[in-house]
Every structure is written in C-alpha cells, then in structure tokens.
Length: 402
Image 1 (tube, rainbow, N blue to C red):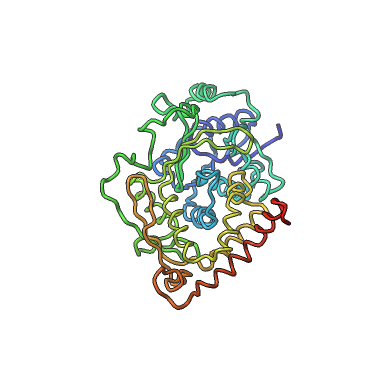
Image 2: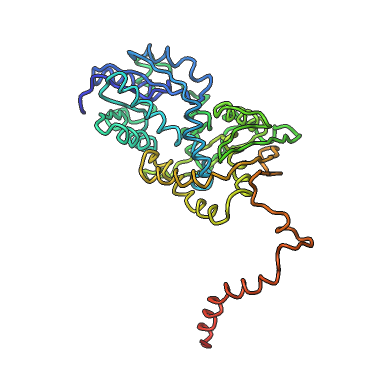
C-alpha cells in the first residue's frame, strides 16, 4: 500500500463508502475528504453530509452537477442513441466519469495526494473511475479498499459498520443494492442474483407498475434542436429540469422498466433491473425526429457505431481519443436533427404517433402512393437490373452456365 496524507473519496452515504471512509482513516492514518455529486438522487442526499462528518470526514463537498450531467454526458449519449447490449441506457455508466472528474477537481483545490472509490474488484465501476482519474491526472495515487482489505463480503461490511456505529442501508426489507441519479435507478445483488426470479413489486421507485398505470393514455411532445432536447409540450426547460419532468411523466405511466443480464467488462455476467422513464422517452423521441431529418447513409453509418459508442461508455473510456473522435462525428450527424416528436404513453408503452421538422427530408410528393409527377417509376427497372447484376453472375457460376 502506498502512503496517503489526504484522500478525496467518492462518497454516497451507502454501506460500502461509509465503511471505506472509516477504514481509510484507520488503515492509512490520513485525512479523508468526502465528495458527493448531486446527480439527482433526491431524498437520499439529505443525511449524507452529517453522516460523512460523523463517520470521520474532515470535509464534505456536496456539489450540484445535475445540469452538467444531463447536458454534457446524457445528451451526447442520447445523440448517439447509445444502448448497451440492446437494452441498457447506461444510467450508471455515464455518471461515473463525471463523479471522477469532480473528484480530481477537489484534489487540485485541496492539494490532496490520493483518490478512492467504493467499487468492488468484480465490477465495472472500478474501471470507469480509475480510467478517468488517470486520464485527467496521470500521477494521482488511487486507493481501492475492495482490492486491499480483508472484508470479503457485504456481510463483513455490515459487521464492520455495526462495530463502528455506522448505520447500514441494506436490510431484510431491502435485500439488494441500488444506485440512483437523474437518468435512472438500478438494482442489483442480494435477491436479484437469481436471474430466474422476478423482482418484487415493491422494489421499484421511479415507475408505477404498468398494470396500475392510468387507464387513459397521455400525449407528450418533445422538441429537439440539433439533436438536443429543448422543450416539452412547447415549454422550454433546462437540461436537468426537462429530464426530471419526463421522469415524473414516464414514471406515472410505467415507462422504462428493464430486467436484463449484461456482460460486465471484467468478464462475468450480471443480473440488473433498471428504471429509466425519462431517458426512454427521450430515446424514442430522438429516434422519431431523426427519422425525418437524417440522411439514410449518415443514419446507417452512425447506427453502425452505436455498439462501440455504448461499449466505450460502459467500459469507462469517456475520456479517450476514440471517444473524442466518435463524439465529434456524432455531433456532426445532429446538425439537421431539429424538430418535434409526439409520443403516446400508455401502460408501459412509449409509442411514436407523430413527427415533424422545419428541415424534414420527408417529401409527400415523392413518397405518395397516389398520382404524382415527380417520380418516374420506370426508372426502377434499370436501378434493379444494375443492382441484380452480381447476383445473376453468381447464380450463373453456381449453375455451371458461366
């Protein structure tokens, strides 16, 4: 173990980071500054400052980064339509580089020498945090308790917490862990380690069960300017306020629940349950506006990059040269993505029922099945024959008539 005099800890107030705070003080005999990023955790943040001080933190930073989170992290991922393994909208993954970035800012402000986090040696978060640390401050000392101490399970942590008088949020009534921000809330561990088991109905926080959602649908319109959401139902809102509004609206109608088994970067599979109501609405709305504003080949090329873009977020490479390249490229594709999507929310379903744009590429006079004068259907004969030529030659060769 390296020496440390002043450590900036990414602190949440949960079991792991509360134990880590006390453990760092005991093991390293160092000063620990707790850093808390307000990403939209809601009521979870209320006791965090007092708890950190009581556990031994010399200082506690609680920084409101909600607008930055949505504007500079969630919206760029949205513009790329980033979805990991077909289902996961990356709510936890996209938050980690921002938290780590803010930790490094506190390190510089406080002239600290080390950073620490609560991610385990089995998970993805350790990679996300540490790649960001090293990308932004190459010489920083990183302390990872889960890879050093002899506390080998959550049970060990609970016992350690009880010994030191630290309240533990994991109880018999909540036998799983959760992570919440403006983009989503995730659940994993405990009873969810069985991928065959259906999550308990009372686990969900942001969304109603679709069965208990209103019996009448609601319609919502989302405006975009150059790929960025700017207004809901004609009312302009800032980034965080807009997403929070859609979270409440989508949650009421049971939008955005996902139960999946995903592939972690470290090599194992993991069962997680997610609620992403506002993010789901934005994803569907963005696709709808793109459908009338993006050139076909630009759309297909960008779509071919979605798995890579999502993978880079999931693996923790937000601050990498390849991500810089992809973000720049995706940004160029969004220059024309301006318009409005109209969606219908009903019992867990988010359906597109309209899309329009002042720069729409959709032309009724070309697309119509009725009589028109702008498209000569006879031109299709040569188009098809030219494109069929290689198929005809291949067939002739296989039949021996070549």
